[in-house]
Amino acid sequence: QSALTQPASVSGSPGQSITISCTGTSSDVGGYNYVSWYQHHPGKAPKLMIYEVSNRPSGVSNRFSGSKSGTTASLTISGLQPEDEADYYCSSYTSGSTLVFGGGTKLTVL
Amino acid sequence: QVQLQESGPGLVKPSQTLSLTCTVSGGSISSGIYYWNWIRQPAGKGLEWIGRFYTSVNTNYNPSLKSRVTISIDTSKNQFSLKLSSVNAADTAVYYCARDERNIAGTAGVYWGQGTLVTVSS
Image (cartoon, rainbow over all chains, first blue to last red; front, side):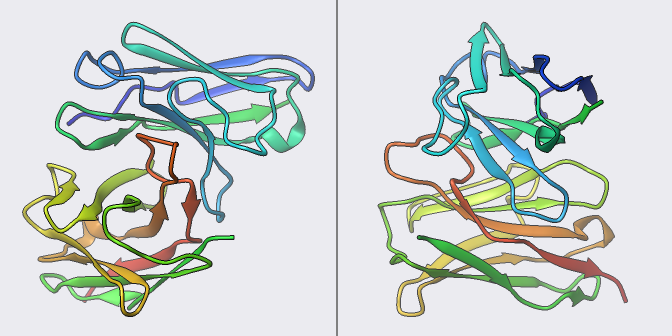
């Protein structure tokens, strides 16, 4: 299975909104509504931010939202805050009953 | 609150078997209720899903690692484990264990351990 495709980096200023894309195939992102997004601060455990494309776990800020169109999923962060600076990964369930991650996107808050 | 903690040797020789354990607290480890996952991250690279255990007949592995990986649970110790055979330098990474949650499907984990670094070197 091939890793999902994410931009290597994105940036934004505090208060702005950014969107991170996650492109797969019909065998993963396009075939199932099981796309998740994780926030990862280096040296810490990854944190689940979005599951099943657009659902937020309890305790995750509503500034984080997810969507999907075809084989591309997206994570949008609105009202950027300095603490949002982190690496973000998408993952998807696949037709092989496995999971696959994206390559990761480094978010810089300017 | 569920907590997970990885443990195991930090240094493994090439061609040997890497063995890690994830100890679960704040909840019981059991078969057929949750998915118990292993994920790794080589230095400077992204997350890679290794595999997951649901039941003894419902265990899934990354196709690129499938021939070398075994994930199992030990309910008596409230632990689950990862064994990766015939390791080489490319297996050097921080290894994470994780568990999903009921009603949160298709994710590598809701609860994660802090990760443990394993270096493959002679």
